[in-house]
Image 1 (tube, one colour):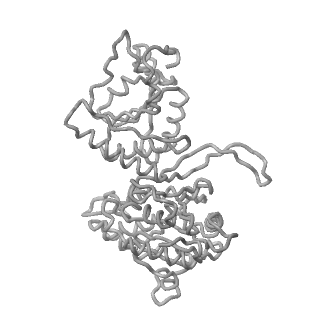
Image 2: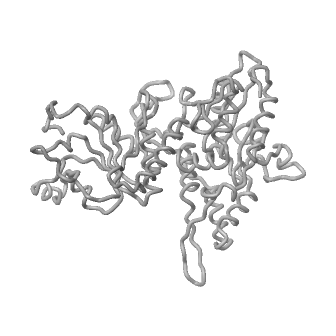
Amino acid sequence: MDSLIDFTEQQLEEATIEILQELDYEHLYGPDIAPDSDNPERKDYREVILKNRVLDALRKLNPALPEDAIEEAYRKIITFNSPILEENNRYFHKLLVEGIDVTFKKQGIIKTEKVYIIDFKDADKNEFLVVNQFRIEEIEKRRPDVIIFVNGIPLVVMELKSSTDENVGIEKAYNQIQTYKRDIPTLFYYNAFTIITDGINAKAGTITANFERFMNWRSIDGINVEPISIPQYEILLKGMLRKDRLLDIVENFLTYQEVSATDYDSKGRKIGNKIKLNKILAAYHQYFAVKKAVENTEAAINAKDKQDKKIGVVWHTQGSGKSFTMVFYAAQLVKKFNNPTIVVITDRNDLDNQLYTTFCQAKDILRQDPIQADVRKLSDEQKENNKKENTKVIHGLFDLLNEREAGGIIFTTIQKFTPEEGEMPVLTDRHNVIVIADEAHRSQYGFDPKTDKKNW
């Protein structure tokens, strides 16, 4: 396809739909399924999900569950209790990836089971629909350019701008998304991520991302970085929205981060701090790096040579999101390899604290609290002190590794591996331990540099 530098917004919309149809998406024109159309799929313009498609998917994916359980699941899908958009988005994402707990009576016994909205294992068991010009009336009347529905749920919102007008570019598309969040917020309760493009440029980001955090997606296959001569919207659509990849991103490469932020009053005066919720979407290099690392991990686990259990090296430039690459990788390890113990090694206390904090803030995807090792091994005195009430618990690396048979994400500095009297004691002989070393090259200086044992 030639460059879209002379394309209008309508032509860009048509080209977008064409690509998605090539990816085997069904296409419907918004007005054709509007509440006042001949084939309505909503009862009014306030509704943002396609109810019958959602119910059909719930029944299809959960055939063993009774109808009252399906109806309870649907009620939970459309019921939100927070006045904050980001909190509602987080709530629904949890339902989406973990399933919906429903309680029902079967043969006189009250049971609680999960209802699933999407089959993440088999993309072909889900319904993928692209709708353009989908009108929504909430606080104001708005009509997003393109919305992608999966099983009737509006997961991706796309805003397109013409590249023929030098005054209207991709930043205007970003600003339009912000307007939609204000005027039709319910749509974004269900949103996984948004895409903005003017045909020349194309970027993806989450509901909490500022414009600078919207990122290009530069590869379709994870091997080749596509040249900028290819329209960027085409690369992004084919790279992110292939059915199985879209579901993979939604399930495994989105997380939330609670951070402290400055709070201001209506006049712009600082009034204190508040907890801000950020939604994190993996960039293309993080996504493909994690996929490759998981593949290499499986190969190392299954290697016949028990001495060679090396997984590999992921190289990052400064500021390219190394910490979240590690978070997404750790989350995949927990899910795919029967809950191994993960040891994260750094070479400085400040780096250890920084990375530990990032992991703590990503508990939604890790589904557990990481632990910091304070010392190599607990002394008898420290063990006794840990039993006392109102005492800060001291964690020993050796003890953390050997008091469990599986599970856990443990942070430690490499100084805790310093040999004692020329020999390094075995910390554990378990085989289900995976080590992630940050800045590993800095540990290769030999044994001449002295260790500060007061602060290791």
